[in-house]
Structure formats: C-alpha cells, structure tokens
Image 1 (cartoon, rainbow, N blue to C red):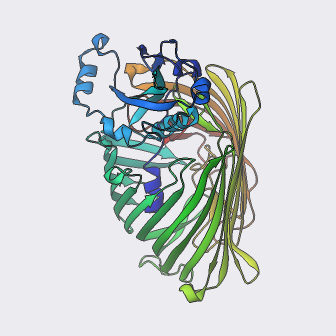
Image 2: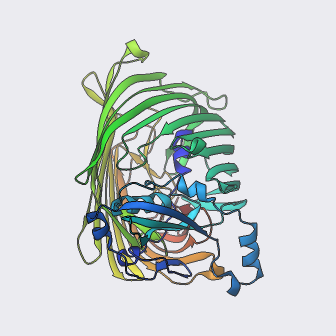
Image 3: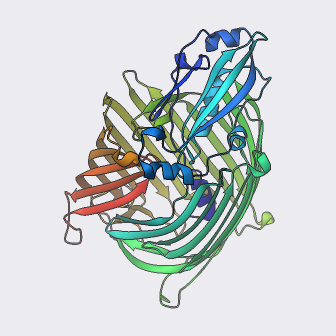
Length: 556
C-alpha cells in the first residue's frame, strides 16, 4: 500500500445517529438519552414549510457532548476520562458546516452536513436541527456532536491466513481538539516491519484544503509522501485541486499456495497533479469534469539473497488524462448493517467515473499507451429493508492493440433485515485480468475473504468469491466501551488460469465458521474487531483444520 493509500485511509469514517425528520423541525427544548440525540417537538414549521417560505439560516449554535454522557450517574473512572479528554473546539465543527448564517434553508444541505460530520473519526454522533423560527423569516440551527476518545496509545495483534501481525501505535485523530491527526506506529506483518509517522490536517488554516504527510522506515526500504488537495467536499462543490508526490523503496514478494517463493526490490516514484470543475448539484445529480497529469516510474533489482529471481523491466508511465464523473444524491440512514449500534449512511444512488489518458515517450514514458480507468455503482432499496448494491471497476492500458495490466472488478452486496437485531448478508465478488505487470499477482486466500485458508493461497488471472453471513447485533455495551455482535458465515471461492510464478489453482475452496464482533463505541477508531474461527471444507495436507483470524476492519 502506497503512502497515498494510507493517507486516504487516515480519514476512515465513524458512524453517528441522525435525528428523525419530525424531531428536526423542533424548538429549543432538547433531551439527551445515552447514545441518542433527540429534540422535543414544538410549534415550528416543518422543513418543507421552511423551504416554501424561503426561510434563511439565522443563528448557528454548536454543542459538543462529552465522551461519556450523564456523568452524574457514572463512576469515577468515566468522569476522569471526560476530564482528561480535550473536547473538540466549536470552531473545528463550524469549519465543516456546509451552510452559513444568512443563506437559504435547505434540509438537503443539513443532511449532507450530518453525513460529513459522521465521516470524522473523532465524532460518534451528529445532528443538525432547526430549533427556532423567528419573526424575520430566519431559522436558528443547533449543530450537536458527540465526542469520542481519540488518543489511542497501545498494542494490537492480528492474525489471518495463518500469519500474525502486530502494531504498537500512538495516535490522536483529534489533536488538541483541532481535528488534526498525528500518528507514530511500529508495525510488523508477513511482508515487513516498519516505523510509520503521519500527519493530516483536513482543514488547513481553516479552509477546505487538506495537507497530508507520511514517512515510513521499513525493514525492506523506506517511503515518503506529501499531498495537498482541495476535494469536492460536497455535492454542490464547484471545483477541486490536488498535488501529490511519493517515493518508495520496498521488496515485492511472489506467492504460491500461501508461501512466499521469491522477492525482488522495487523503487517507485509517483507524482500526481489535477483538479476538476462542476456546476454543482442540479435535479439530484452532480456532474464533474476532471483533468490532470500522472507520473509513475518503477525500477526493479534483485536482492543480494535472491539473485536467481526474474525481475520486470523498468517502466515509466507519464500521461495527461481527462475524465468525467456523475453522482446521484441518494442516501439512506440506517443502523446495524455494516456497523454495530451506529447510524450508517448507505449510498443507494447511481454513480460513474470515467478516465482516459495517453502515455507517450514525449512525456517521459518508456512506452506509448492509452490509459483507461473507470468505475460504476448502482444501489436499490427493494422495500421491506432489503438493499442491493452493485459496483464495477476497471483499469488498464492499451499497448500495441493489446490490453495490458488490465483488471475488471465486480461486486454485488445484498442486505436483508430480519429483525432489529439480525441481518442476512450476501456478497459476490469477481475479478478478471489481462497481462498483469510482472510485479503483480491476482491472489485469493485468508487475507481477502477465504477465511478458512492460508493467505495468498490461490493465484491466477481470474477469481470469484461468495460470502454468506448471518449477522447478529446485541444491545450489550460492556463497560460502556464496546458494541457487541456475532456472525455465522460461509465462504466459497476459487481462481482460474495460470500464474506463471505459482501453482495451478485446484478448484473451488469452501469454509464455514463463526465470529465475534466488537465495535468501538467510545474511541476514534470507528472500526470493528473481528475474532473468527473458520473451518476449511476442502483442506489438503498444507492447510490447518481450523483457522483463527483476528483483525480490525472498517465494517462488520
């Protein structure tokens, strides 16, 4: 994973609760229950009436709730935590609002602001609520958020695919209550050990510009990255810009049947500059016109301990590109799907992103090639709390009339709510490749969905994975720290085709298992800890009869 990817991961979303529509058009009397934000109904126009009257935003009040609510009924340790925690500053919240005093009232903008605040790892809940209607046709708004504990020093352990990983980390996702992220970590996994230092300022000098920096000193090399970007932060944003660069030295491994068979060194330098323009949101759709220039240079060398390895030729791709993006405004707020006890914003709209570029020796490339990248997504609410979401993505190059380093990924996810505390989940994923670059492999194993088998077990030029899960969500919150869930699952997958460096895949592999889920209720991680026991149904002598997996993921 490049530093660019790690920087993106640093802004992992944390889920929160939305106030029901009737409560949003309420007066100033507020009631707080543990884990919820509610508003007592009063004689205030509804959201639709406010928009019809052309009401404007009046006073904007910010309220930041502490990590643990109702401190009078809590024991001493919880009050100590509240006392030690540096609360999010009002101005940190205000910087992220998509509306200002004097602007027209639109419920859609308030909803989008709630979703944006939910995406911050240092907040657990958020509501944006009209609380009073004034004689001058203005409406006062209360923005209420719930802090979480964001300073997380400690040690973590993970296991999947028969391999262990460790992490010692000091991280604060809301440094001094300013919304800035700093982290220092020591990690170790099957590929390498590393010291990592990162800093992210998502609102540089109070603006929408994001500054991201990262540095890693690894057992097989080093990595540095710097990025400055102004994203399309809202559906009605009119422009974006980005500039980024990274430099990485690392070792690349090739795998067969879960075993590393060879390694070689790679030096990768990347540079990316680009931006986009948009006329904003119209009739529920946003269209964005994109352009930029990318530079990706990779050089390869043998390692002193593995001199007989075949290594790829050095390769440079430098190209301008243009693109277009379509996004439909269609979100659903729900609970207990991919998170436990948290509000989730499920995207059920349609979106598309298309990019085309041309790499030429005139720009410094080692070859001429057309670059084609894109993605599609479509979601559907099938009524009775059944949801179906499809996604399709592709990338590749057209060189001398042939597809090179081409990958087509498809995924479908289905959710069926059986009760408030149980959901049936099904997922089908498939990938198809054509002439991957020599340093890459298409792998399937315990580290990416086939939980009963070693990591990176099967290799080929195509694969597929079916996952079926019965998910259970409890209301139990031990020590007010964790939301508890469980799952029973079945996985089936296989690879097709021949990877020139790996053994031929041996057909379908299946497993069954059960797992415990612990969702973070009071910390800034916003993740779910998975503890799974998986039993392979098609095991051979090189596969253990039972696999223990411990990992932290973004979802259930």
